[in-house]
Length: 449
Ligand SMILES: Cc1ncc(COP(=O)(O)O)c(C=O)c1O
Image (cartoon, rainbow, N blue to C red; front, side):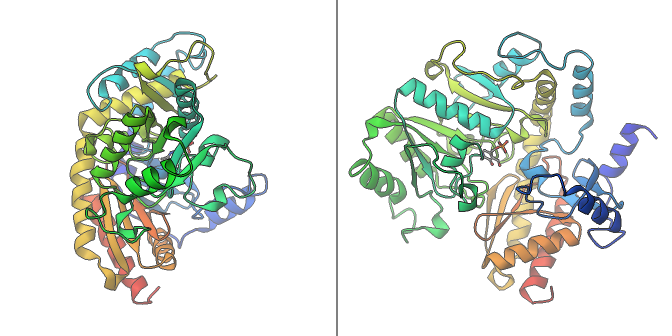
């Protein structure tokens, strides 16, 4: 049996449950493997994945599940896309590593040029630093913002997730467990409210509030009382919040942030680690709002699951000199080969698929769910869809029952579930996912599970 036959047969397989989940082989392997793994790993489901293709994953017992979380919104082109796998294999036979900080090699400049051309705003004047992960990209952004502005303070948002290394975890404000026990963290980080309008923390309603989270939260409360704006290096945010609940802010929120950044010489940094690379139905979520940042951080979907990230800045802000920042394996040739193949696929139709199948899936969920089924809101862009429940317990119950029925989704925010399948998901697979999800919500709301 050829590798491509294996791929096709799994990628087009239906959800198939041969055993209750987890099955006996998975249970045994998981139990046997836990002893020497860091207990910090969450392991939200007892799923032991043997192989995966497209949107389908097969576990150790031969059960086949539909993946609507994509390795936390990362396998943008689907699991093991043949073009990505071939690019990785070919590059691995030619050059695996030499170090992009010190040498030149095929792919590095090509990827940087391509990202600059694709960046929002159409200026094609961006420079790119490649990393191994999202958190490293955020660290690079923090460093560049401080270096360039010669200022220390950073404004970030409640609900944000920016990573788990010490700088990025300081900006992260989605759950206290990410910070507990790790202090002291980075000084000079100030958190304010994100424009999560359906849960407005100051009880206003948009648009009559006049974007009070910016005008009152930042301009009046911070700048007039505690934090001189001329000492702020950057405002860092996810243009669509991810782990915080798949929250889409109103465009005016980003417009106002851009205005105050321009007014005070502050850099506007978009963390598009989760929202970028076609996830929202456009290459960058920024394109939905038409508000161009000064720095962008990418990772996750950029290389279909190979460890790669990018911190990119308009040329005029990339003012640091040789040696001020670097990485041994960031921008590794094999990861770059995967990224270039990924970009070909994204531009070759997957962004379009994300927009159309995403709109279809969201509409189907909106039609089938309502507060009687425990669901308060369905929101999102493209294939970045959030479903908000009445309670955290209900969200947890539905997520777990979906897994037991062969559908993989993840929780996010205080009481939401994120639906973020690979961007190759078909309309038919989206229908299967929506039907199963809706049925599970009905069962949970009626107390049948
Ligand atoms: C918006 C955002 N930024 C940064 C990160 C950190 O990325 P990584 O886990 O690759 O370090 C994540 C991870 O979930 C993320 O969602």
